[in-house]
Length: 164
Image (tube, rainbow, N blue to C red; front, side, top):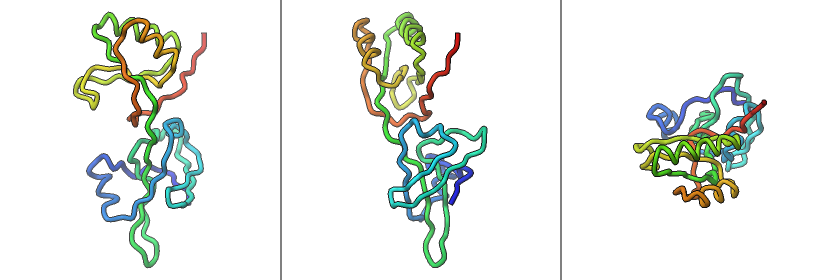
């Protein structure tokens, strides 16, 4: 079977209703695979699927519903994306000056960052980047508060394209 669209997301009321009462199978993906439009997937129950999303389709996210079917003589089945946690550094500078310094310095390394405010799940204004030992050393050397964590990121980190 080939999946050509995302039907919904279980983190919304509508998406949760799509799979209500269905037998769930999960496709467990690393964050890097979320940006791939065409790929072969295997669920945790061994079901194989092809994914072929059209150009311009959004990246996959944790909780995306890829398939809901009702095979002959059986109950409903649903296939849902589950994202593996990503090893990240959660950076929480204590001032705007420190944040600007850190963001500028890390920007020169062409690292992609995600920013969250105080009402996010982090409970503070933070910058999150993929773990890199040189970034960790930089933060430690400059006394910038940070934590290394495993997180399911709402948006996948993309490789940053750059030219001069």
